[in-house]
Image (cartoon, rainbow, N blue to C red):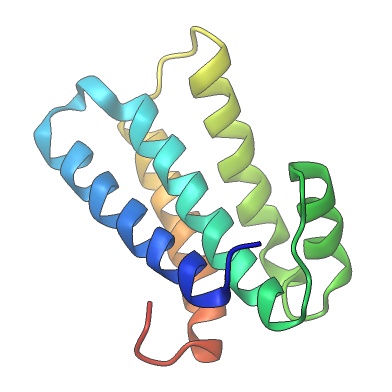
Length: 122
């Protein structure tokens, strides 16, 4: 099981990668939103790891987010990211600039919500 710090490191790594993709061209907008989702996933997993919880699946993580009082508030943002990421990966849906902006807003909300638990790290 990854540690809290390993999840934080992966979230930071993903965030840097999404910045690179976003700045290169709009050609990879589907991957930008996908990397945003996985950044959020690792931020949430870092938080859950501090509680001794290590969800083995997306379904399990969703359940934890809905049940843990410190995460419930960000569930809609997480779901938006997960849904858009899934569409970007598995359908022919075109991800546009508005999708990127909306997903960035969701990621920022998640990061800001979790940040107090990890001062200076994210």
